[in-house]
Length: 313
Image (cartoon, rainbow, N blue to C red; front, top):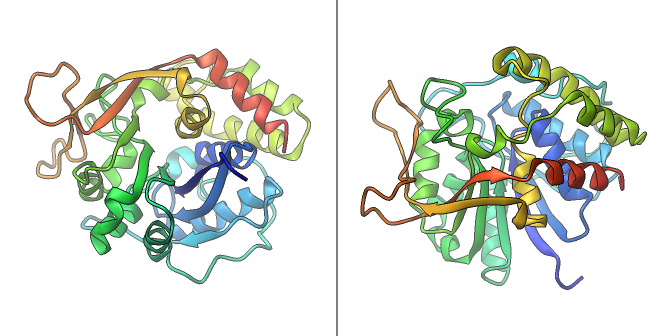
């Protein structure tokens, strides 16, 4: 169908990744060419299985899911079971998937798809550590000019860090991969904590998902009920941030978000600030602008979009 935006979702499902994937699969404007799993929130054996479970939950069993990098490029894997639970999708009781993973390695799938398709037709949507994307760029540098854009969730500037005092989780897990991606020359739209911390769930918003009455709505309410327990304690609010769906919402309604073009560099040398995204928000250097960094979101319209789309599943 003409006019559909073709995307590859690269993900380490967790609960907020699940909501992002459901949003994409529920949106007719998007065509999900494939989902690639990476180790991050939980180890790869869970993230690959979670991606299959989410496709089945959406009733989209034709979606192709590929397994990717089992660990970061240069550092030991750091995971976040303290947020997402042992499986990464704790909360709802989702059945074991009947769908199977594709045989092809995720990185090869990304490279082959980008080399086969017309340049500028595929958007990459990384929701976790950037290991698979960096490996693809390293393996085949010719893909860089063929990528339409990379819209990613990661990093922070004003909100600083959520896994260390200075680093956001996705970037911290594989800072060297993030460094490769931000140096790639590909157009990047970045959804940092600065914007995702303004997309907060609340009792009323979780209730709205549950009230949809379909499997996806109820499962999302149960997922958010679980992951919120950690966030409520940490951020002492009514709910927690819904990070990853911001990526998909931007593709559907970019006007929900505002930000500015900045230079973004990733710290890979200092253990104290490892994985920090150093964003030149005020333009105090002459370093080349390499990302559009979002800072504001219309959170009411964002949640209205989520609820209306998930209601279609």
